[in-house]
Image 1 (cartoon, helix red, strand yellow):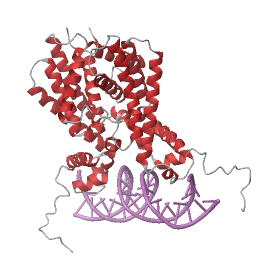
Image 2 (cartoon, chains in turn purple, orange, yellow, blue; image 1 turned 90 degrees about the vertical axis):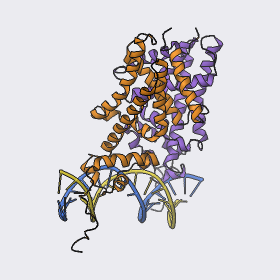
Image 3 (cartoon, each protein chain N blue to C red; image 1 turned 135 degrees about the vertical axis):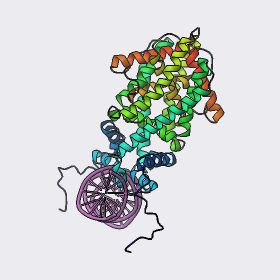
Image 4 (cartoon, each protein chain N blue to C red; image 1 turned 60 degrees about the vertical axis):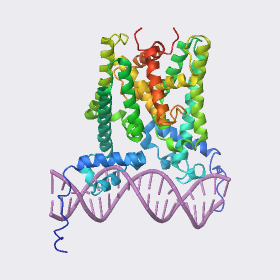
Length: 210
Length: 210
DNA sequence: ACCTGAACACCGTTCAAGT
DNA sequence: ACCTGAACACCGTTCAAGT
């Protein structure tokens, strides 16, 4: 008992990046069982440490959740970026690409999406990293709007204001469809995609008869 | 100790409508402290019963939450109904009235709003009352769209599909503004109201230049 | 029929102690 | 510096028992 056998690499308490491992375990648990399954003791167990270890890296559960949300915004921004890279340069196509990326992300990771937009209001000001991650998403809409104005395809107006309305529509489509509030328009992936295209088309051309 | 004093009206275990009292207590706790404060034992305490009493009226916490959500949809539908009653008959004004009611409700009761749209997906099919309450809200949009088509103010198309897009926009504006994701457009009530009008105007006339 | 009190399992958090 | 194990307060749920 004096010395452990050499074969069982004593591993220095952990693989060196427990913080990251905890975030990933949290995202997994969220995906598997929803917000109720995101408990700190289970996260720790999955990361292979004791239930008290996370407190070395996060002040409390809320801080871990904020880090998970930040990761989520990063993944979302990346997905939108990839979608835009593959899209043609006309504004309608670019807006549709953003919409597909946004709504697709919500459908792939509904619990993460809910968590990202759910009740961090109060603390948000005190979480600069989280704010920055969410702004990165927003800037991409604004940039497409600005470019569209440059091409004469989008009406005049402050790009940031127009982008906010776009974001609102995307967000509404994403959340209402994952909550099942918009059936039967989203019964299949094809129907969902048609609903996305329809929404963007309507946003561009307007509900009003002219 | 044999007999309690007569003065402390023994009250028949409860005022006869514990179910309702629990729902109201839950809504209060939600408003005061968010989802984390909505705990069953506190709800029971506030309603003046033991922590086990709620189980006479609700199978579990989830069932109480569903009842709270249902009440929420009822309040929202009522607010929209009142808004529409007071609005003039042109479609733009009616859509704006709906938007003010919807977003105003979210700002008055942000935690209730979050709860209403958050993760009941799985069980939703098994909660017919909740489904019905949410449909009542939706029907009001569809009806305004239908009437607008009758007046020649709204483009052709399935009213239900058009209403879904309207709902998405409203929902996005409501949720993103209560999460503080759309500052500085919502720093004051006046700014919020301008943002609501702007959004509806954009939905009617479209982002596209013509 | 409706409610209470004790009991159980489980979670967030803390802290003294280990390496 | 980083992690463990015991401990505490608190919550959801159950159940035998009371009226």
